[in-house]
Amino acid sequence: MSLRFYEDEHKYFFKNRELSGITSVIGRELGISYPSHVPHIQKAMLRGSAIHKEVEDELNGLERATDFEARWVLDRLYTRYPQEKFSYLPEFLVSDFRLFASSIDILVVERGSDNVVLIDIKTGVFKQTYCEWQLGIYDLFLRNCIGEVNATHRVYNTKVLQDFPVLIKDNKRCQDLLDKHSDLSPSFGLEDIATDLDKREVYNKYLDVRSNVL
Image 1 (tube, rainbow, N blue to C red):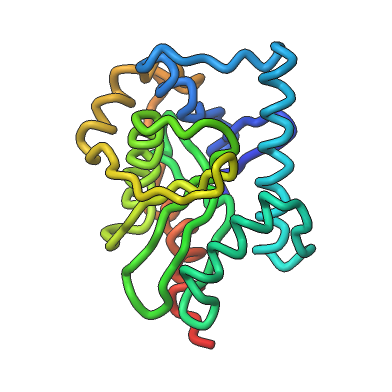
Image 2: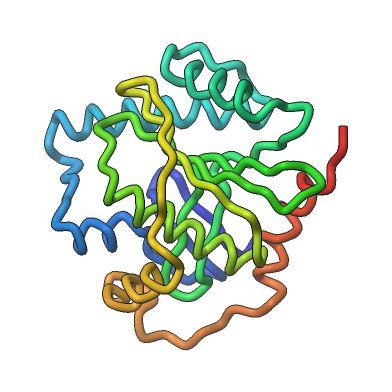
């Protein structure tokens, strides 16, 4: 795919052009920072990454999750969205194909319909406003990639073992926020190089599971 994420460096690229994630955008807007060199923050980030990885691996059919918090996420997911009716796309890459990109932790797709659920896994404190922006931008990028869908949005919080519905910021407000902080992207000021074919790659990945009937 022309849109890629390199986990070790935590960097997004589109056609060899580096894009920014959205954490820095929301962080600047809300005055929040997570300096990774601080020991307790680094420890929390590593713990969060480990839980996300176990969830991703099981959903990709690689290895069954054994971590308690990862297991809670997956059991909750399978109960609310049973495998007989839904498909799961972990770490689903979305973008504006210009400045920013991100990965939806779990995109739940109801097969044979336009119903989707965007799920974000949080292993720390649930910050509602942050999540309203984050899932709102995911929603904006998703529609940019695959078109109109009937979307709902939830946060699975392993710290308190609860999942929360999120009333997202609307697409216009999210686009305005990205425009406001566009200078954070390494590709700021460069010409637009995206084509419909680039978006089609993401759409086809979604369409494969949407059309799949067990």
